[in-house]
Length: 305
Image (cartoon, rainbow, N blue to C red):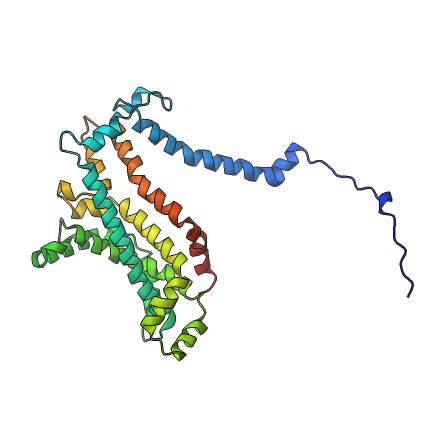
């Protein structure tokens, strides 16, 4: 075979065409424009709420510009609670405690149920999975009357779990989050190879030992996602908390802050937005702490079913 003579590449001239602004906009530029619009659309409400919380006057219609006046009086008055009618710190503690208890409890129960559906084979398994899907199709507001009646009856026997009980509210929240959390975790549990369970069984491990020592560590991303979603849902809920809680010292932030704007003749919007800013801090901190699990936890469960 004869070797091919090397070619002189210098004689080949490549012409590069510079795309015009219109062609760039139609091919890739529209993505940057769309992203910029979404960022502005998302940030503007936050800036408006922050500006309102720093405005010294309660009437937000006095100004049409952002940060027209900056004052920390609303935050000071909200935290000081001079008149005793706004126990903001108590509401804050109630919300954090209820949110943490609900998120941890619902994640634990959902993980137990998801592991059972994923690893065990029993009668009614398929019907149970279908029931979880069907339950998510109905809005939770349809069960408010039933929940109120049930909690009223339970309170006659166990006052600690009835109406105006924070523990009873936590139980209701945990029951409501069980369906969606179980189905979300079920898809993620299916991505864990079953060979790991079989190897552990050969070494004499039971289902409980496999679940607590092996599986939970492998599904940590979806546990973090479910915990974050549950915490956000509980801390932002107003309907259930307003129905089941009545004592001002037991209210959550959503129901407590609503009292600041209930009066049609005196709506303290500046203090209300100040409380909204402070109430969002735990969620932001939790999100930043768990952000490395968010993407993998939301996407991995959709790869296998």
